[in-house]
Amino acid sequence: MTQQDWVPRLVDTTAPSGARTYDYLLGGSHNFAADREMADKVEQAVPGIRDAARLNRAFLGRAVRYLVGRGVRQFLDIGSGIPTVGNVHEIAHQEDPSCRVVYVDIDPIAVAHSEMMLAGNDRATIVQADMRDPESVLGSRTRELIDFSEPVGLLFLLVLHWVPDDADPPALVARYREVLATGSHLVVTHMTDDIQRDKISDVAGIVRSSRGDGQVFPRTRGEITAMFGDFEFVEPGLVPTGTWRPGGAGDITDDPEMNELSFAGMAVKPTT
Image (cartoon, rainbow, N blue to C red):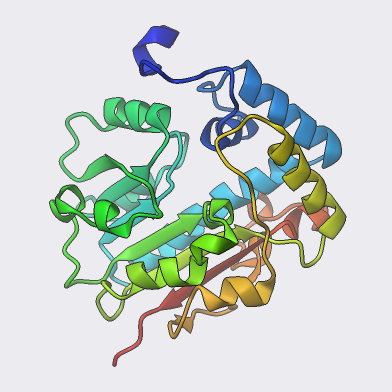
């Protein structure tokens, strides 16, 4: 596949993208020099940041398997990014091929590559939309696969820290939560400066000084907890990502500081 096959027209490849930088940190190939440069700067400031990215991906796998085990057969992955190993539909379909998955991303390269990967798959699709516009995310394309009268696994993994405070993230997430049926689960990972404040400040500064597609807004445990509203946390609650129900050595790192760069949590919509 040549670069022209997966790079949509009008994409500025000289400006770093959060989705493509994350792809690079995970060892992917759908990124450009600007993305690699920003990732390398972050890694110089925070050695081991690749482990933090891997922890998030490992958590995704644990979360999806947990939800399928609890009877959830529909998934809405907001800010899904560029497809890489261990996507939601791959994990879910290993457990139950009947699962339906809708990915949502604003990045045109993430969308273009997802469309190629999902061609011919009638149980998974990609929607190009801005997560800050729930009406477009929850529109007809999504509803072709997702029945919101049944439980849904709603995933926001390392994306809500791209939403600025003036966009009111708790209110934004509430608009998604309110359409979900009882038994649905909200799953979130979010960058935090509660524990490793200096390291996270360095990361935010590097992103801020780039010509990238957004800024990061790390938040406290309390601020992230507010996004779950009245949903009831699944044990162990909102915790450092690597410590959420680890199943083996690959789910956590030997460096505790890399486990503390983000929080992870899952909560279920209770019976009203």
